[in-house]
Image (cartoon, rainbow, N blue to C red; front, side, top):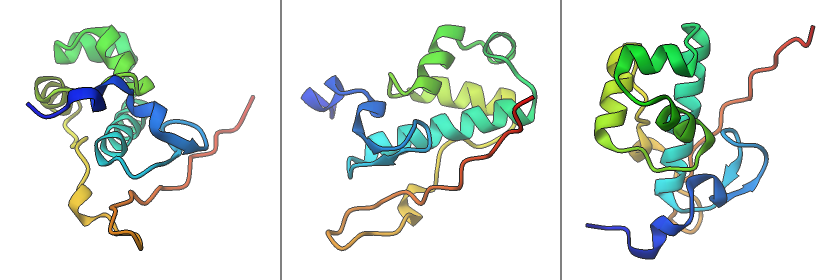
Length: 120
């Protein structure tokens, strides 16, 4: 299985500027995909008014696992992703092969603007 020492560093630790899950990341593609999944999950949960607890109940995924994915402290596995996508009825996995390639031949995820919320 791939990984070795590369899994010692958590996805969020590859951020070079900005705040997770909207940070600018270095070129390590698995960490970029982890960030894109975390961002898609957070946005889907917000749109559908899911808490981590309610999504855990709907998906069968442990609440702490959901929190860890959102926080970028784990590389989510396929069972987790498929279960979350099924409960949300939304794709979370990004089309990372469509991401632009930089001048060094490294794929870089295009970052959407971070949603701004009104503070009451």
